Length: 112
Length: 116
Image (tube, rainbow over all chains, first blue to last red; front, side, top):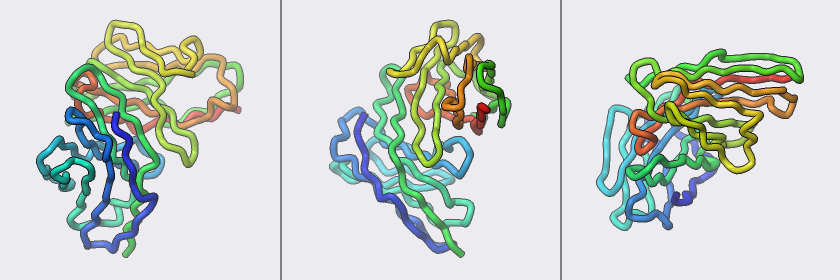
């Protein structure tokens, strides 16, 4: 699975958009970009995933560059409850079962 | 939809005893379940993958005789930590997939194990 690089921490003001970057320059053509988040002392929560096209759901938007070397997770109106560790994972799903390899992620702190 | 539960949420046991952790998919059938471990201030590490009705596949360095996994039905997998030691104290998290792990996994809330 593709190795990803994320900034260790970011801050965001409540009500503003949080834009979390992820570099995945070694991603292969069949690897999806998955985003999960983990609030302290809880299990990770699935957010969104994409392959080539931009994706949006009720939680977030995912913008993937055309060359697929990087992506940005956007939380349009961050709240205090969005404070968590956000993980960007390259995942070769779609074939046999795959392994989610969690890196260190980005600690997002949303402040009032 | 896609809710995964774990029981217990917290457990304290004495060294040398065994403890069982249950992972259930509440509203879907999970063909594949995964078990992770997370030490303080570290990321999740995959321990093993279990498919319903077959033996679990363990990651390198994980002792299969110490961490017994049983995936007896499409909604239940159990992890038994045998002869627990203080170094087994950790946060154990399961996840479940309804697509054989090919797409998104849904995680349980985790079980905090403390071995005294």
